[in-house]
Length: 255
Image (cartoon, rainbow, N blue to C red; front, side):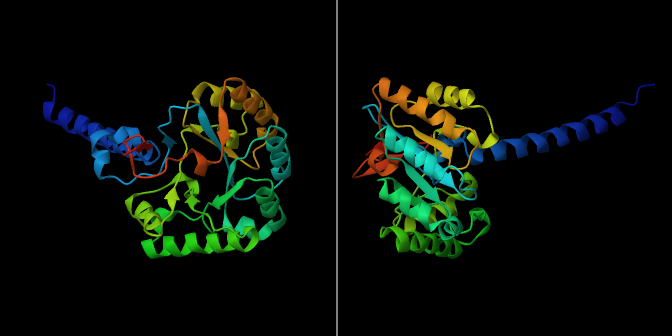
């Protein structure tokens, strides 16, 4: 005779396990995907992922946390195409490579904050986040003479208390809307296809200064964007002035 109670107990255990796994996956996805939170985003603090612009303007950014093999090559490529970008630097990287920090700034690029030690900000208290941000700002300003006004959180991770801490000291947290995935070691052709197929007015594109194939892909990407009528600017020039809001996708919109 079929033991219906035993079957129910067994299936209930399986369903419970699947529910836990699904919840964990959803939580991980929403960390860097603000659109998934929908209407609930009205109470969630977000960084700026992109900007609501009608003109064809886009920003190129590079994160620098560890290696330094290609930084000067990237600066030279940007110079050759008449482009200025935004470099988000970790404070420890600034200390190790002060000549590169100076070269980035002297070429007309923005030098911004990527934390002092690349810690997981969500694990720090608000006062610890603020202290870390200020420590990186001081390191950058000591070399460039200009204190950063923008920060990209380490690992792209954030929550409400992290964004609140950053906002409280008058800085803006910046994410990205186009990820080149160059850090995965994908080919130059794949990097190029990813960026050009996803970019739109107001996009912020993420690269890394020490990714294997970025120097190979960058010239073609810049040339294609310029042929298509895009003006490539540092992030601070892409951002809107005056009052603004950030919608549930992380897009900065005029108030």
